[in-house]
Image (cartoon, rainbow, N blue to C red):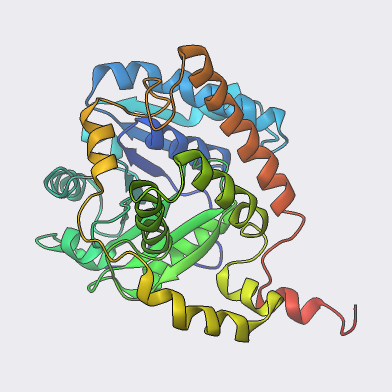
Length: 334
C-alpha cells in the first residue's frame, strides 16, 4: 500500500466520517474547519437530517470564538451527507465514529474497505476497544489507525493516535501530522493497550471516586468539588509527571508507599453506576444523571460546558506544549 499524501505537507485531503451522532458531527466540524472536504455517512434518518444543522451551529460558534476565519456557510458547502458508503469513494482518510460495539465497528470497517482505495487510511474512533482486535480480518490491517478524540472534538486539543499490532508506524505519524492541522496536540500510543492513555488513568480515578461514595466517605458532590479544585486547577497546564516535577518528587514516593495498598482494586462495575444506568439516566441528554436536573438546568449545563471548553482552550493556548522545536528556539535564561 502506498502512503496517503505526504507527511510533511498532508494538504486538505478528502476525508470521510461514518456516524453523525454527537461525536461524529463534532469530528466533521473539526475536519471542515481545517479545510478538508468531508463525506459523511449516517444510516439513521433522524441523525442524517439533523447533522448539517448541528455542524453549521458548531462552525458558527467557532467563528464567534475566533477559531474559524472563513464564512461557516462556505465551509459547510464542502460537506456531503448520505446513507450510502459509496459517497466515501474518493476519501483518503475515513474516520468511523459509530457506537462502541466491536461487531458494529468491524462491520463498518468492512464496508469502508469495500469502498475506498487501498491507498486510503482508516481511523477508528474507539475509547476502549483494542485497535488490534479491529484489524482482525481486515483487507489492509496495516492502514487502520486508532484516532481517539475528546468531546467536543472541534474544540479540544486532545488526540491519541494508537498503533494496532499491524499498523505501520509511518501511517500513525502521518495522522499525527494531519491532527496538528486540526488544532490538536497528539500523543502516539506505540503499543496497543485497552483504554490507551487517558482512559486508563481516568477510569482508575473513577473507580476510586465510586469507592469513596459507595463506602460513605464522601458524597458525589464532595468528590466532584475536591477534584475540580485540585486536579482541575493544574492538569490543563501540566500532566501528572510534569506536576510532580513542579511540586517535589520525593513526597509522592513516600505517599505512594502507604496509599497504593489501600486504593480500590475493584474489578466489577460499581453498584451506584449500575443503579443509575438501570434508572434510564443518560446525563444531561435526558436531564437525568448523578445530579437531578430540570430540562432547563440540563440545557444550561450543556451551554456552560461548550462555553467553558472554548475558554479553557483559549487559556491553554497561552501555555503551549513544549516540543524539541520550541525548546531550540528559546534562548537560555529567557
